[in-house]
Image 1 (cartoon, helix red, strand yellow):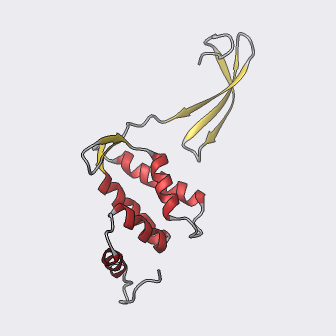
Image 2: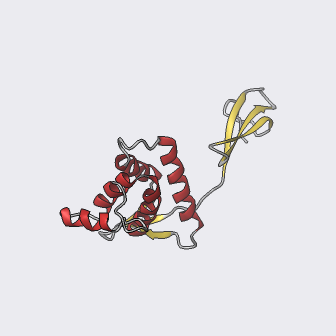
Length: 157
């Protein structure tokens, strides 16, 4: 590791600890030449995921964009930001495990809806209305009817 102060390539590790919920390692280092102390992070390198949009465009998967969409759907529902981060972490892990690096926006939307169904019914309907491009009240009604509980009653929305 090259020292940011003197560019010397030898350093020693003073301390290592898990960071980002165990997804990376934070290391405190000291340059053996000038004794400058600095921090490095070690992360697993992941292959980029390409999202195939409805309009035919391709773009790199954006964790931030997904988190923003979930945040909008979950506004005023009591779902914490930490819980949304966990949902995005889980979804990203699912996508990283796939052998195919290309995924359609429809597949991502369905994965999100699966997570939201158990998390918040209000957020589920909100997200579905944007993702499935609802055109009118009949789209809302059919979605609500699809949320029947096993006992045949409509889930509280």
